[in-house]
Image (cartoon, rainbow, N blue to C red; front, side, top):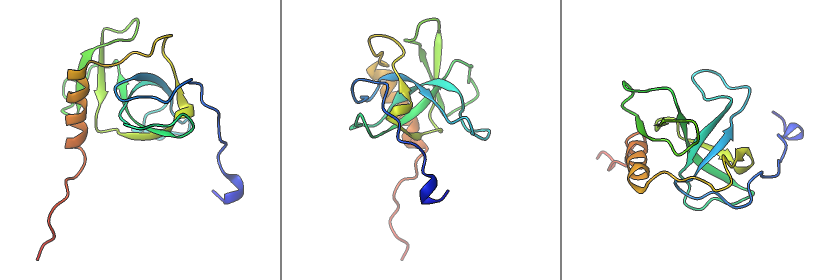
Amino acid sequence: MSEDNKPPKVAPKVKAAPRPGQIYWCDFPKDAQLPEFWKRRPVVILSPKSQLFGHATVVPLSSKAQPDNRNAHSFKSVLPGEQISWAICDHILTIAVSRLTPPMRQIPKVSHADFQAILTLVHKNIPSPRPPLN
């Protein structure tokens, strides 16, 4: 993509910067390639300091059971119509805040214990710094 064909800057649909543990709907890119996430789906915000006109780091959620996925955390859903949500902790993404839509009037949050479990799995999927070999 050349500098002349930059993607558009889209105004956010949310009224405040997202906070860690909050759940929003995210409009993932329509040109995704499997196994990337696509379509609208819920996400948990990870970013400690998102800005309204900036970006946020998120973990996508799925209602599809993931019992064999050691990188997924299940929890009681806080979204209407869903029983269980699964945080897919090896699909960490940074997206524009403008891709987010509030799922309801009051922004739901995962519990503190579930957010800590999600963070633990996310950390397991990021390499740790290692001392240099001599």
